[in-house]
Image (cartoon, rainbow, N blue to C red; front, top):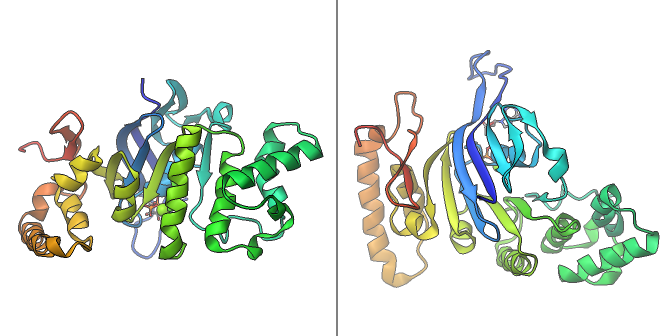
Length: 311
Ligand SMILES: Nc1ncnc2c1ncn2[C@@H]1O[C@H](COP(=O)(O)OP(=O)(O)O)[C@@H](O)[C@H]1O
Ligand SMILES: [Mg+2]
């Protein structure tokens, strides 16, 4: 049994009709994706802006209504064919948001921000609550005196730690982290990511990590799904994706990562040129007449690629 199993998930939004879109045609933000996750692991969802990553995460936590498909959490239905049963799992699944500047209420003290989920689910006395929040702050590397401060008194990295403290307050099993460090300076990104890994081991957390940054995905993830226009183009272990990419879109993403190892620059350059040539020549073979990805086909036990029938 998978810890989390997503089957043929579709999330379509009504189209209000804009400059470039015909009214009536729904926006197919997520259009039939399948994946599963194992407990204690990190699953990475990658793709360019607008490919449907956030919509997928929000569907899993119940913030987006699903159009069809099903989501099983520890073998139980979270949502199926448009019906949500998320309420029973609200403690178990939490989210860390992209922007620690706007996701924390600036008018609230840290004590009130972190204790919000506790107040919804547990009846603690004021002193118990304060103690719990101080423990959580220590767990994320902030001083217990921080409870009376406001978000603006912290740096970006510290604010994301406050967001993490709030997310772990109820001892969740799954955390959906949507671009958790992309609003932070590069110098603090690694700190926050390494801290997320430490706390993952400590609390046996499972992460769904959403990012457009392949460097981060490679560093953090066990399994990876590559999204393009609401569908998957490729899925596999980190080694499958980075050492043996098959879909032209995946190859393009990987060939664009700058290589810091000078010994590999030449090799990387040749790979980039080869991918560019293949992209120009064979792009059309990888997508259907609407420019959408084909269904995934297995090429090994762990590795799946969206290739056309004719292979
Ligand atoms: N509430 C919504 N109503 C209509 N369209 C939406 C809504 N949320 C997202 N979309 C559209 O769905 C697509 C996927 O968006 P999103 O999941 O945010 O992508 P990503 O996180 O990969 O950048 C985009 O075209 C976006 O404009
Ligand atoms: Mg997003």
